[in-house]
Length: 121
Image (tube, rainbow, N blue to C red; front, side, top):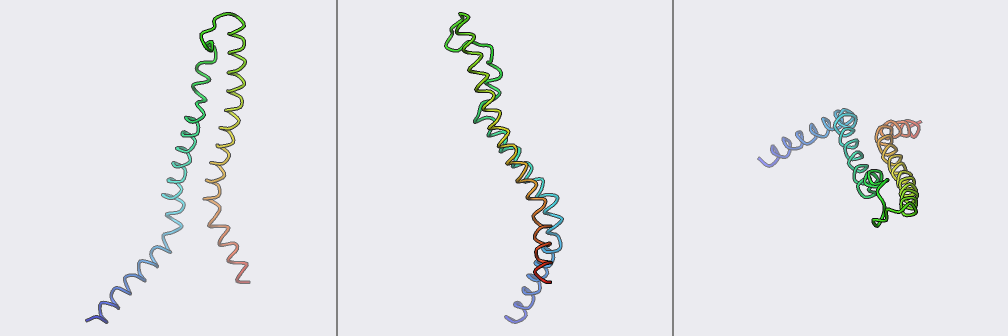
C-alpha cells in the first residue's frame, strides 16, 4: 500500500511540476506582469505621498508663515518653486527606477534563455 501511494503521489508531483513549467511563461507575462505593474504604481504613489509634491504645488501662491507683505510672498513663491523642482527631480528618479523594474521583469526570462542557449554550445 505504501508503494502505491508513493507512486501515485510521485506521479502527481511530477505532473504538477510539468504543468508549472509549461504555464510559467503564461503566468510571467500575464498575471505576474500585472502584479509587478500594480506594485510599481503603488510604489510611485507612495513616493509622491512621501515627497508631498502635490501639496507643494497646491500651496505655491499661499504665503509661508502668514506673511502677506510683498517680501514674504516673494520669498514664499521662490522657496516653493525650488522645493517643487527638487521634489519633481526625486519623483522622476523614482519613476525611472519603477520603469526599469518593469522592463527587467519583461526581459529577464528572455535573457535567461539566451544565456542558457550559449552555455549549451
